[in-house]
Image (cartoon, rainbow, N blue to C red):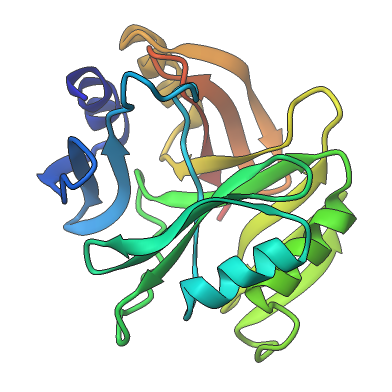
Length: 233
């Protein structure tokens, strides 16, 4: 936990506040006082590598969990009470893991573009169209107000737009195991990538230009992979 905070704090400008420790040490990362991520310590008997988990907000974690099972996914944990909500951990039919989060009613939705906040998530999978059907049915993207959720195809990706923002994509990738990757917003991709190496991380790919801005794929000192994005104006 100390190593993770020592890396991500200076790199992304995060400050940390204690979180619930029901399952071990846990801290929340904040940007301008808004919670943007959580860091927890893996148990000694936990076989998963260090990784970021993408959580999708939903009105009912139980209903979403039922949808995962009904559509061929795997429910690994929960749903169960956690802090001020309910969570579950699951995998889609192709093996990509993700989380489900049901917050308390009345929770405000916050969209941030400030450096350090999550700016984009992307699923790398062999069949993005089949995956889009799975996630669309589990989270009911098609049954909502088009102004709230819109699914479109652009730049060789299935893209989810929420309230006018492009927030997620599903794209074809055969060279990697299916997984969700989080992109954190930064002011300068090249400078942040250089800073990551100075802090003990690695640059895995890029920096390079993309349709959504300049990106780079990084690994923290413990091997946790993530990407950074300096969005185009």
